[in-house]
Length: 559
Image 1 (tube, one colour):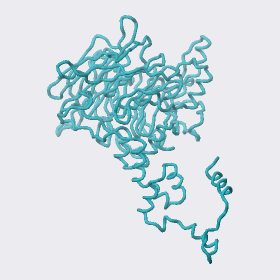
Image 2 (cartoon, rainbow, N blue to C red; image 1 turned 90 degrees about the vertical axis):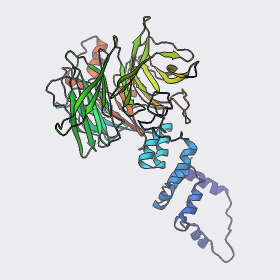
Image 3 (cartoon, one colour; image 1 turned 45 degrees about the vertical axis):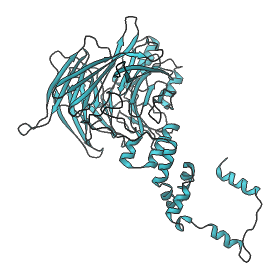
Image 4 (cartoon, rainbow, N blue to C red; image 1 turned 60 degrees about the vertical axis):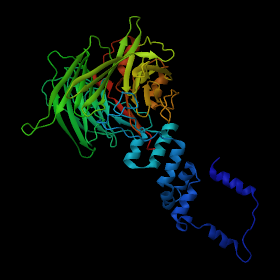
């Protein structure tokens, strides 16, 4: 029953009583009741009255006229509603890099945690209404799906409808297991080519949903891109992108501007030593770069800006670390240390056991730009209560202080926490503690992304995307069921048609998110390989059989 019909029903039940004073007609009284109080009462009085309304009432009131919309959108009203419904943690800013104060994570980060993802919008826009809509949509699961077809075709008219298969253009490369990175304005895709051909990093605009350019390096040697990362810690408006190659090289670009007028500049290319192997991971923070090869050869570099004599960027080797074993997947996380010239590098990787089980390993390297390696610590998970080791291999791994999350092919997600624990001598020692397994997926988890400040975890599989909260409003660590489940028509259709037996051919292969949206890459789906596998025939795919990937954007601010 609608609100209007309910009001009409109540009006029919009540008897009509004429309260008009003697000598005054009912028509004149009705005319007085139609006065627009927004033009009679002062804004202060109206805003005081509106403090007694709920967010549903304010939303309805804003549709009455432009005057009521202006009043119902007052920031003070929505600040009160936001704080009352979504309590914020103390908005403590990150300590400066040169601060010597002890961090909240007991040495796992440069300082104390921020207020979370929602604080980014508050600091940029000072818009409590947008923050309320954003947080409400995250909790309620209200989102709008937009598809960006990387084949170069125009996006479908109805973003929520199922995408029809398209054939790739002859001038576009065949995509297979691409490497993806994500910023606020761009999605960067580096397709893997079967012949190890360097075809650059494609830059796609999220707002305009189109291809705007390609990042290419000037080096003549040809190699395939195997890893990609964007520097998210830089305070500058431009972003730095680093790509690792199959021959051990890495190239750094700097991109700036928006989709309408954007520019890119290749800073430099760091050549790997002779016989170098494929780079499994790269990371960049400010002018510091780290790479990890398939031989678990971890190298630290520093970018040197142009000088008066040489106007080109150069690089300097800081240190080189090597281990005897390396098991993919590998994740590198580089951030500033507590002092001005120190940095922390966290290396998380898969670690098999002699009993054919899988666990995780974490290395923390503290180094200085002037003093070299300061410390090197190894962490193995310790069970808080009971931790059953998985016999299923890891599909992906991510470390964002203080959380370490792994995904497995048996549909399970494991969560760990790097925390300081007291010792007998009143000192603190950092340990890696297993928190809990997460059971919610009905298929293999193929992608995940994590934000350590807000404790938000996003996992994806063939059965959809799930959003988890690893801590409550006060910052206390909790493990709950997923707060939101996002399902796309493409994935759900394949999931139902294949009888829950297929392993993520069209599900998300990569995930990224910010304060207002989740970005997924549901990479190439080859119909021929699926048919050949069922018939026992040759499953090799020609370029015409492979549909290029689709970027799906789940937006929570547009609903």
